[in-house]
Length: 66
View 1 (cartoon, helix red, strand yellow):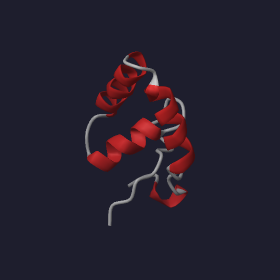
View 2 (tube, rainbow, N blue to C red):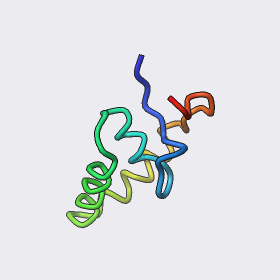
View 3 (cartoon, rainbow, N blue to C red):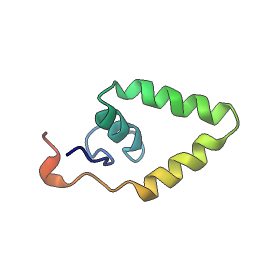
View 4 (cartoon, rainbow, N blue to C red):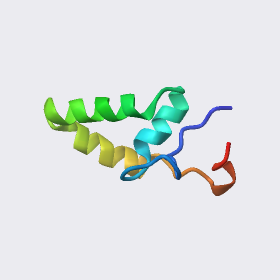
């Protein structure tokens, strides 16, 4: 079963974009560009990122190499 976690290895700030990219099986740069676009087009990206940082759990250490 697929679960959404913040990434421990692929992170710039909190691992939210890396975790979303792993969950959707796409390049993390695409997710980061979407976040950046949402920040500049209304500013809601910052708020959504902070909420995702709080809500999405950190990837367990045993799953780090998978």
